[in-house]
Length: 168
Image (cartoon, rainbow, N blue to C red; front, side):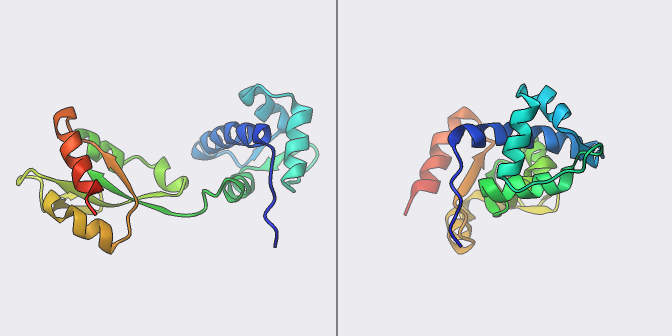
């Protein structure tokens, strides 16, 4: 099946729609009208309806659009349904906050491993992950084919960690 190419303006608007829809979903909303999306995204509601029809999304007159269906469809279009495995370096306060940040998995990002150089933190649990020794970084990243890392380390340590990640 041939992949559909959408104009960049449409994709830009789509990301604004998606951010708003995720917020609604997080507070338990199930439907949304084009008028609500219009108000939130600052886009004419007729243009929103045109965009939605371009994406083959239909709503019910007087009810609106199903939020979960819109989120699923928009994620398919922008490629966010694909899971991105992430290595997190730094198990301090910032690293712990990132691990516990709920919206990441909703957007296809999964923190799959966490590293630190502090012997007090190594072996401890952060969320559902066990902190690994930073010296294992290169092997774990290669073994699990992790292509993305988040650095939650001091500015002084950032270059050293980046060098570890860049080593072939």
